[in-house]
Length: 277
Picture (tube, rainbow, N blue to C red):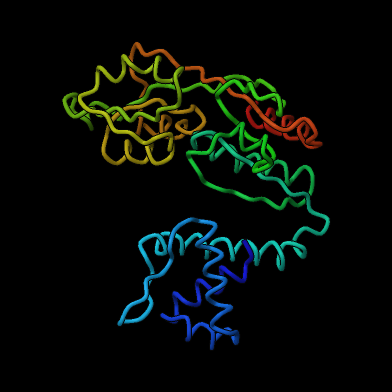
């Protein structure tokens, strides 16, 4: 799909009519109609309805609009700004499974930049993204995941497991009857391990892998949950959290994934192991 078609779509949405868009873009109305038809043909959905009150976006058109804006914004960056920013700078797209390693990815990017000069870093948040598939299809360069990669298009290195500890707010701050377990839903290994903790809690709140949001919730509301040790260490030291007695820590598998031809794989692995050490 051409960018002009997207620009025309946004112009029609802004001006409220094909005639007005044609005047603003200095093209014929036929050209405007053809560009809109191109998008509708590719998406299979109408973008506008025409009536006595003018032209308005359909429900699908309203949903499509922010995507069109984002595509044009990314294209403007890639075509205009990116060539200037990438001079003598390596580019690296990092991904982490279900946000549990979001802070670690930031630390890794900083360490990599310090060690190998300036880095052009792209961070993208999508909790539904399959990390291994994203690396295999060139969406990401490198990813950290807790699922054993089976895709032959990628290579991986097994790291030391990430240790998750069951912690809670102090008993003086949270009554036993109000204890809520925050479930990060980090896959089958995690779910098998946390069942007993869930049974002991009076309620359960799902955060779908967002470790930092879940931690903030526990600290403000009170509750318990499994968190990576590096995330909770300062809160344990301050007394804001405490380990749950008789609980067993969860060693969550950790894999560094890249395509076989990625030249920085060993450098990234070394930086990551240095950080964790």
